[in-house]
Length: 343
Ligand SMILES: Cc1cc2nc3c(=O)[nH]c(=O)nc-3n(C[C@H](O)[C@H](O)[C@H](O)COP(=O)(O)OP(=O)(O)OC[C@H]3O[C@@H](n4cnc5c(N)ncnc54)[C@H](O)[C@@H]3O)c2cc1C
Image 1 (tube, helix red, strand yellow):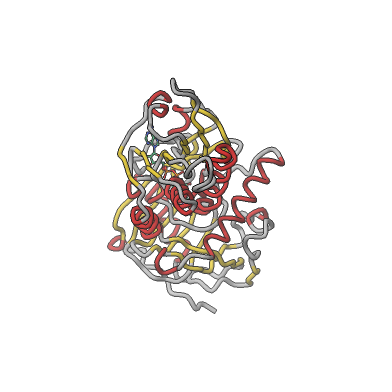
Image 2 (cartoon, rainbow, N blue to C red):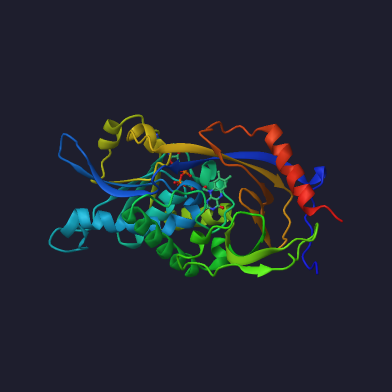
């Protein structure tokens, strides 16, 4: 029985083509303590990058882990008003979702925060993401420690998402329908953050009859989510500074004694991390359509974001060109038209 509305995929509904570049990393997340030598002594540096294809999903958990590392590294300095004085001011490098969530965490722990970034949130990959709350497009890690880090980050992030005021943040739970030929990733569910999918003999969506499965997860309307993060940080006194860093010396010259690196792909050059690689994703934006469900078939997906219906997509490894590929976009549209074609 078909109960759900069909999307309007006509030429007249197409608004624009968009491309974003995911900050992927072989080996998965890097959240660890480092230091930066300066003439005045070493500064604490904590890395928080490698979120790859699911940085929105991981943002709050990775922010908490990074803040924990800063508190461990700075020891007594983290004791507010204690013998060693107030909490140290923090320079958060970047202004995408990872940096904004990190700033939020430090602000809530009583640190003064300045965010330094070449591009502000609306102009980053983070604003292009859909975003589905699911650990997709990331290397789960080759070692038990790497896998444990990702699972801890996922669990913390899940709890933080559940605590949000959903209207303010633009987060809603939606059913996600997957045809049964779509790849099934048990590891997205066996970590305990989401209920596993329920099999369905027939998906309740328009198009040819097909079996599949459904699960529920959060959908994050990223423009509203990023605006809320930015507004909240500003209201709590964070400063935003437009800066492009070309060397570690420039970072060392910042006035803050603690730096948290959320520079995503920028970490490849600045920190010689050649495990980082770009993976381009293409999207078509169609006129907004509040369909109330998601279709997900690996990187062929449909997300009803409030500002546009998003049709994905692609995962093009080592492609960093932010220009949308017209031919591939036409293929994405043709795929979705076939998927929903009336019988
Ligand atoms: C098409 C697409 C769909 C996606 N869908 C999802 C999804 O459904 N769910 C999900 O969870 N995730 C999704 N993602 C992934 C998600 O967008 C990323 O993981 C996330 O945005 C990474 O955030 P970030 O803050 O680490 O990096 P970015 O958003 O790239 O921000 C990096 C920041 O660092 C700054 N910077 C970098 N280098 C320098 C430098 N040298 N000097 C100064 N500043 C610098 C930039 O200006 C920017 O402010 C998707 C991505 C794409 C492209």
